[in-house]
Image (cartoon, one colour):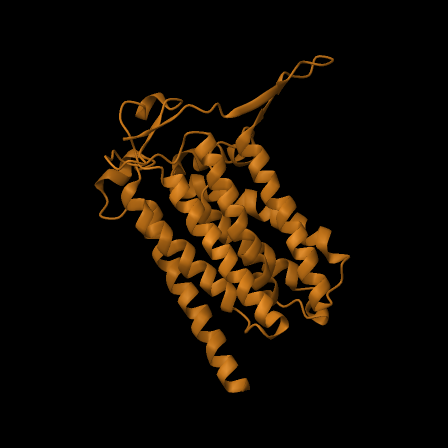
Length: 275
């Protein structure tokens, strides 16, 4: 009987050789999956815009808002929540490659901020903040699944030691390669994919009649509840978390869950008043 899974996948797919003094450039699974999340997400938004009669010319602008707000928010969030001393000493580290360190809670704040800025000039076309946030939440759930698969390919987001038969031995991660561990990146991937299909079903059923804020509320409650629970199976990212009752990811998830509950209750209340 299989007692564990040996994971020895290289994070690099291939390397582009040096050309004219530039390179070599490694092509990594994480970067590919990160990009695929945006590419497929854009196609989903094109479909949604067509179905709901929104201006197709806005798609590229919305994609740029999403790209920059996600990366900047995730980078600032990483340093603010996990390495504040680096942010204080060298704030330019946020925009310097190789962009090691992305915080999903920071990405959530960045995305909501970016969508608020985007929607300010598009209310005349019905693209209110909640309308855009609800539809973007569908794509972000899928993108989150792609990113967590990228974490798996990087042999990161490592779980605690386990004896379950699906435990992974991460040979590429020498710090944690001695014993089987929970594949927490897979746990999160499955949680986000499930959410993606649920939100697709809700949108396909209601489309423009979807109560404003319902999908983004469901997203926040589902994602950050899953994150809170799965954190119990993870190794802490930084040493100071060892002295906390709940680690940083869990502490940041609590207000996000409460905000999601508020979005849902607000949406259902307005739906009830309109009926």
